Amino acid sequence: MSGLSECEELVRGPSPSATASDWARQVLRALDITYELSGACLERVVPRSGPVMFVANHPFGALDALLGFAALETVRKDIRFLAQAIGQRIPQIAPKLLPIQPASIRKRVPLVNVRSLLRAVRWTRTGHALALFPAPSVSHWQWASCRIEDPPWSRIVGIVARTCGAAVIPLRVDGRNSALFQLVSAACPPLRHAFLFRELLNKRGMHVRVSVGQAISPDELLAYGRSADITTEVRQRLPSAFLRV
Image (cartoon, rainbow, N blue to C red; front, side, top):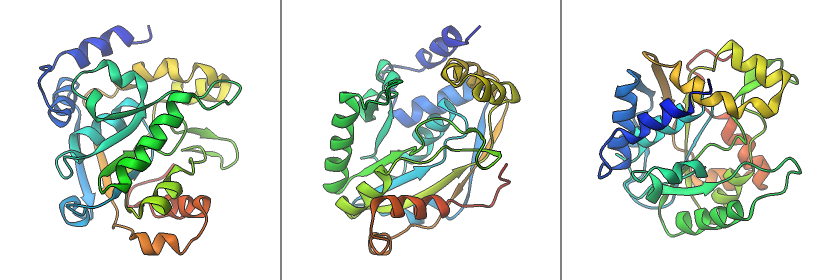
């Protein structure tokens, strides 16, 4: 019913010795999912060395992560992904993960998240690449804006940009989850995560478009001052070439 067992078979299919990018491409092929990058040329806008942060919206869930592993490791081999801890079960991507756990219903930040955030700052500050989805959950219906979009982003984008002097590459993944997912999210938010495995499986045969934005320099971001303002500015600079719902 949830699709969990089928998803587990999919992720176990590729060779255990595959790189993170090769693993992701094999899973995408198994699902018959293709993707294209448009907008700025990723190879040209991403610095070959020094601190850089890839920031993307989060419309689908696991599919967003698969696209990140498939596309980004090829331009920065030193990349780390601030992503859900469940990925640690997958040997091909575990070395690339800085794991985070969903916050509790009391909104207490899990200790593993604090540790991973500190590791993310240290990793980026020493001249490496970091990728993350700043939204605390997958895009869903927002009553405030009356549309499907990411909920408010975490200030981690501004914190890393300020403390590490990182350039930021904004990415927009085009699409949204099913109407059933949106209905469940609106009616019973705690059930949202239980439907994400189904959502990955129902993307079979899909073609996904990812738009790459121009790099935002550290100096330009620092002019915005506070971490929250930097984060807001980065979100506003997500490429808007594709339809927004």
